[in-house]
Image (cartoon, rainbow, N blue to C red; front, side):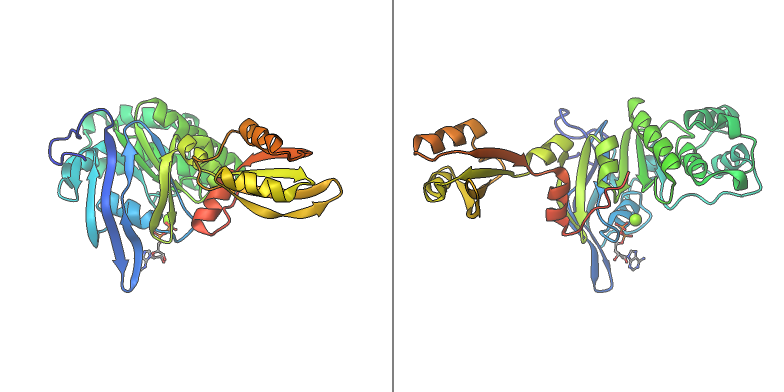
Length: 330
Ligand SMILES: Nc1ncnc2c1ncn2[C@@H]1O[C@H](COP(=O)(O)OP(=O)(O)O)[C@@H](O)[C@H]1O
Ligand SMILES: [Mg+2]
């Protein structure tokens, strides 16, 4: 539990950069965000994954104090939001719904204007900070070019440069690759990956599973306003069920053995060499080792003519959790 007001959270072993409890947002009759408990560890690249309309942007707006919560609490960097907004915001860089750029000003001139509009930014260091932010996102060569001549990927990187104008402990990026072509998408993904290497915690939303798998260490999955899973990517993968597939002429005995092993077998479909019996473990952690399953089957006199184990992919799991197919392109 983060200790609000001290800037330090709890026992020190696992500091949370973002923590919400029962965070909810109601729009009329619709509960767009439904009691979510987010726990974003310090230093993580945290993927906030969910289909369109699942409540990601609404949540992000509440994290940043851009929208009021209907219920629940938000802690960012150990401080309660929105009460401590003035202390929190200077330490957070955000890209939500892209900043509006002046098309006929250069990228550098746009950043100067945005920095000047920020109460917390020191004018004396502005020039140097704009330069280094542009370098950071790979736009140094286009600093003097008018923004209307930028590609979408360049505009998006300029938006990220804006979030990087001051040193930040937390970066919040809402679907930073949305609307980008494959080249722009690659540029932004590799940029996001590199941001974390500088020590910032990165909270990035996406409706693309593949994207989260490529750039994140942790993820949370939203479905219709609810948080249906969160953890490290490997925890999320481990939680997937294993499915075995067995080919045998002794389906009846195999059935009994699999049930004894805590699995749920599905009646065999006849095949030339016997029946195909499939079975899933009762729970993700309960699956016996494949060699043990085979040993037990053989012991019971089951003629094993084919055996395979398939672990549910992260994609299967997301589809099972959200009830929606993810766009797996790119
Ligand atoms: N200002 C608003 N007024 C009414 N409904 C809204 C508003 N903002 C978002 N919603 C609704 O809340 C749900 C979640 O939206 P959003 O947070 O934008 O989802 P996501 O970012 O995951 O696509 C959607 O059904 C959306 O229509
Ligand atoms: Mg959104």
